[in-house]
Image (tube, rainbow, N blue to C red; front, side):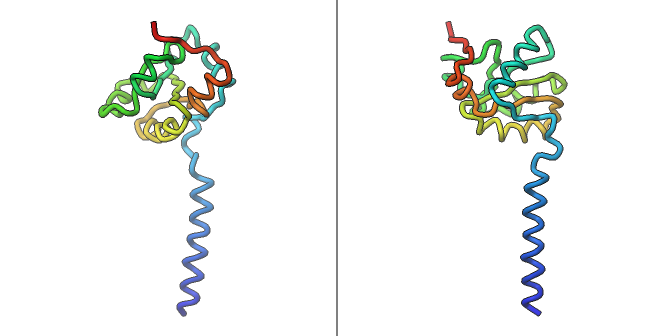
Length: 140
């Protein structure tokens, strides 16, 4: 009897793991990870679009050294980060980035739970953007 229960538990865990893996991005299609080329194209296509905004999640110091042109700072390290994020218009389109793309992945979940409709997250973050020679704006 114990053997059968053990088999049912193991099989159940196996299927749970498969379903969790497959379903991890379901419902997040509107919060898409994009590479640097796609991000550059997105910025170019939305240069005059008032409903498009770039969000920098890095620290204040990192942002003020250099950032993507027209990016606003919503620092992930601020105590009121979620409150700052929630002041943004959830119907606008956003390009979101951090240093290497890891915080952006977490913010993806936060934005989804907060009801954001369209956000693109820069895979590889600002580091990859800069390493690949894309333009950055230096603080003046």
